Amino acid sequence: MNPVRGVLLVVALPGALSAQNPVLPLPPKGGLSMVQTLTMPYGDRESVHTIQEADATVLRWRWNLIEVHASGDTTRQVFRYAEYTADVRESPRLWIFHDAKSDGEHPGYTMHSISRALYRRISSAGSDSIQVMALDTRDLGGALSALGGFARTSSPVRWKGIVSLVSRTPVQFPVLVNGQRVSVPALHLRGNLTWRTNQWSPEIWVLADSAYPMVLKWRGAHKEEANLLQTIRIDFPASGAPLEEALVKECRAELPGIYFGFNSAVLDSASHRAITSVATILSRHPDWKVTLEGHTDSIGSAASNRTLSERRVNAVKDRLVSAHRVDAARLLTAGLGSARPREPNSTVESRARNRRVELVRDCARQ
Image (cartoon, rainbow, N blue to C red; front, side, top):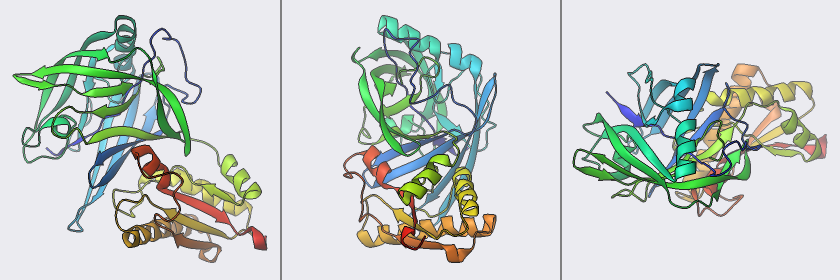
């Protein structure tokens, strides 16, 4: 068994249980991608979770894990798991790790949200009971263990206890929606959980939308409290119209929906929709020449970031040429590394904002 962390985080708004958030049209539908970042002292590890199928009874998710290790070896695993509508409606239990060898069927548990019923009870009473299925990886200890991190030995355990409001006043939580920075209301919760003689007091930030109270941030309260798991991007399926309009009017646009493995130029398969949109736009404008610009955050050396950004935009170019037959002569690439940040690299969400691919049209010649 090779289980891996796989949690997303939640926001709730007391006294506004029927409120719907226009920024995040939920419940989620097929094609939606959520990006989580595990922040550690040496960098941010992103994981992309995409809904492959959505109907009245179930959301079926897929997570492609691509991770480059210090040795240069690459880990690739595919995780598939299901989140049932009935559990999103009623279950007081949350499952927070994934196993590549499992079918991902865990009826009775939510995956990326707490249930609507639990949301209502916490919002009205200030606290309620919860169960969290996690991994016993005591050799690692603390938050990383509870969140299903890699370990030499591990086994599933069920934590039981209470989750309570830290404050009834919601906070504004930053997230990127289709590449744009927005703020959504979130509640700060704290758990008081036990398993055997072990205690765990995680902090959770959860979304003010009763349709799907999504987990937005999770932080442990033990040795690894510096490591936190946060939902940083939510990309909804969209037409290429805004991208095309920006290229026509401003000659530059960011490409949301482009994802790479940690410290890697390997494209996640969830990127294919965005790349297809670029190919479609270029087919409508055969006179356009464009430059793919790669940008990174500032973690690591300037030289390594520049090299990584070059490899990433070349991977996008190769996909456009090989899969969509775009003429390579129309596509230039530029790896700019960390030289042009959109925001200071001081927070996990600002670093995510800086890791991007931009498309630039050569308007001087067109």
